[in-house]
Image 1: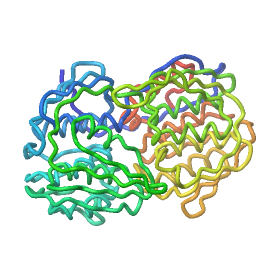
Image 2 (image 1 turned 60 degrees about the horizontal axis):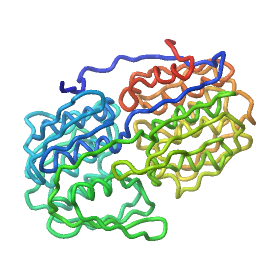
Image 3 (image 1 turned 90 degrees about the vertical axis):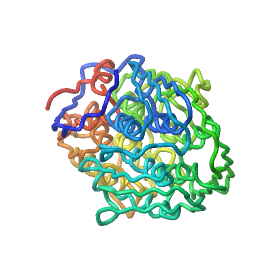
Image 4 (image 1 turned 180 degrees about the vertical axis):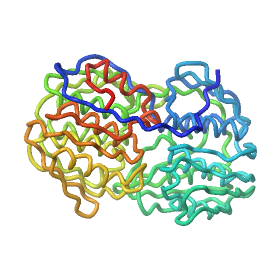
Length: 453
């Protein structure tokens, strides 16, 4: 049965988490990697033949991508529990959609689809929910205009966004002003239908799922390391052929039970089948730098991506300084890392977090507010976040956190409340479903106390 994304507004869902009577224990699996899930559906739609996907994340964000690929002419079928088939017509053969493409809350889907549409001779309009409509798209549309595509949007490059693609896209050579896997991916996707070589230079290495998947479907991609950054080169007009994909567990989703297991006294948790792409594991490295009892076991390769199991035990944490160069490998994990830092001995500094200001919310400000309202001393200096740890004692808690329609702020706050003196409430947890379906149920399985506010 096909599973389409809902279009009705999501009702607010306040939740409260509190310190339980016992530790967190158990073995779990988290949902499939969101970044890989989006790309699996997109590449399946661009390739010729039928791509079989297992482990696909079936959260609201990814379902929006599935709907968009259907609207563009691909056959997208859900067979049940993460198993999907996508039949594409081949590169350059997408059809003009008959209606507006509603991307919900997903910035990844919106920005990557801009790249796809720019190099097809079709007209389309993108929109999204209130959060997505407030987020900037010029970082994508400005470089993509160089292909010959035309874009029209609200002030500041915000959705709704009209796109008139081109039948003869020019290849781009673009240096990213700020490291962004989404912008890089959009440019590479536009380059699929361009004659010649598309080149993206990134100042810091960002997640490379797009490069890996391009190769998996038959494209020629070369990567040259330059200092902290990389130069990615794509040969245009490849033959993309359907290829099966196994989606590993999402390390960004795993971040929440990981930190919960580290801060709730006595906890022992194993998380199976987590993606270990080295450009996604900055959180794991940082937590180990903090002295966390985090072990990686059963390492293997599945579907071209490294995978393993994480074994976690609660224990003392030390303050850490996260260098600017590590930000791209853990950009989505800073809110929950901040929760871990709140329990550490000493003062932690997270450097160069400007990218957090253009996420589902101003995630830098929202993270600081999350901690402050729960009795933790926090400072923002420019784009740096400074957190004064409690020295292992339980912070006060007792606050109500404004989530700003941001799923990661909501989950981070609920993790915090599992180990504070007083419960922590979030004003709205409904948007957790966009990335982590059944998050609350999974945490209940470990023994977490999360319930209605």
